Length: 416
Image (tube, rainbow, N blue to C red; front, side, top):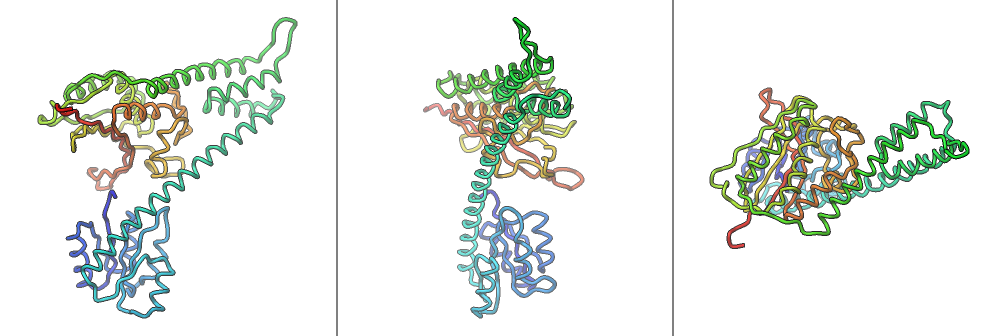
């Protein structure tokens, strides 16, 4: 559970203060709203996992608040406070979607137990929602591939007078360049080429497509070979201190100046605490360098121009941690950052959150880069994750959503 935040909607000032105090002592972050309207406004600004609301409130009562909170992918777990023990009212509230209810006067042990259960239920619902969305996205990806193949098979003879169709195909091939595109292009060559005694005449634009996709296929084969080599063999490791790895990373950043220059990005890297600088790590420098530069390149591709990419390095609980933060541009649907249902998918081969092609960066844009990173970090017995964070350090007071790539590697104690 990342955040133990609770929204309490209670118009009774004394009871509201009591609830906030009791829940805060239990370790929860509590926001108190004096009525239903202000509670809804607080929730819409930043959703809460758990909401505790009084039933009778001015302006927007408890059941109206419950109806208004039934939005979003993961609904909050709602608990109702009421002084009315009428079973009909309790049944009505539960049918509306309340998880539990509390009858006044409130008992300390009761609120502690029920809130604990509410957070457990929320986490279960959150994981279920993520799994369902991942499954849906996988099915949609398979359907897109089937539809694309059917479209290619239905083209038949390429009619040169339909230039728009050809340009559309050309654009599709560039985005999905490689083996599948080559198969479809060769079918088109077979349909449109002319045999001239000894040679076949192929249109120049088709030949350009063949060359482009052959190059991409070769690059993807090389990427596959690198991933396969990591999976099937045990790479060699050398012992580096955190400070030595830190110096290597700074050198790799210097080598990436041409990548940073494309959209005028800057990199700021934190210092290492003196007490941690001599801690040892086992590193395959070639593999780790490729992974580190891949993450930085991804951060550059999906960040606003002229922004700063921040790298924080620290030691925590016997783990070396390197977190790379960037300020992402908006997704195609207007959202910002990495939706929770994509946090695991983006490390899978061929999965791309964006369908854009970044020609200036010279990358494959196949969805293989992060698969390599994931494999490399696992070979180091490490962990990698991607998630959104809120940056509240902007001077204008408006928090920004940033994306964090975090690599964790185990510290090698001398006894190991």
